[in-house]
Length: 286
Image (cartoon, rainbow, N blue to C red; front, side, top):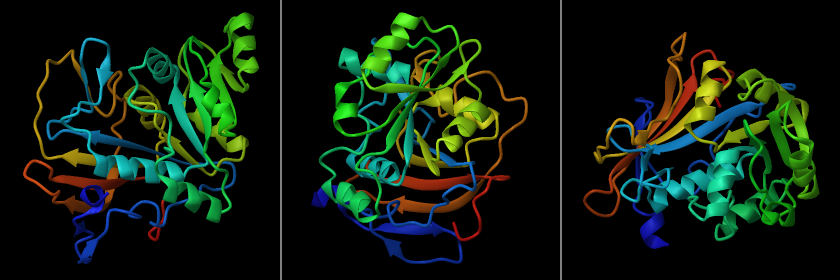
């Protein structure tokens, strides 16, 4: 645990701020927006290499490489989940989980007992609920989600076969929305989850859903860890933060904060960034 949580982080931005911070509690205790009315605050998080890779194709699909993943970033990933009312995940993730090649179970992980206790102290549910976005609805819902007391929502195509839909309902899921074609819009995601009463929505669904949210102006904040390491990879064998067609309008973000994590050994240095959408809802004190 000492290796994971020390040394101190150095605050580099805002430029008028100085000093250091500890890793544990960095995102858990930070002021974060809560949404407004029926419009939730939506955020995502990625860890990347210095050359922008979030995953590499290892022959069984794209995975976060061990050369980039690290326990200090993983801690912050879990802290962001602890702040959420609902997580967005994907059918792809659930298929990978069933095949035994997903990175891990959905957060908050049981080993992060301090975060589970923190949620209890804040009057939150033991675990954030889950919204599954899928263009096919071909996946299995893990029994663990129901055992953890999470509500599980489906956002799936209108033409989903009744037999498949019934199987998901028997696994404890409810339909939140159905969409035409094979891809939901960011606005439909935002409006559906807002109507269900969620104030903070955390997308852990990967770069395709990030593209959908950013394209439609619905991703309010991007948290990003940049490992100071170049890993390369063929152009068809890696993913970046956003995967999809070129955006018709560029999405501009403003740097809210930047921390330097020196790590504990050569090669461990990385940065932690928070970037807010330029026209987003995050106020000056958020």
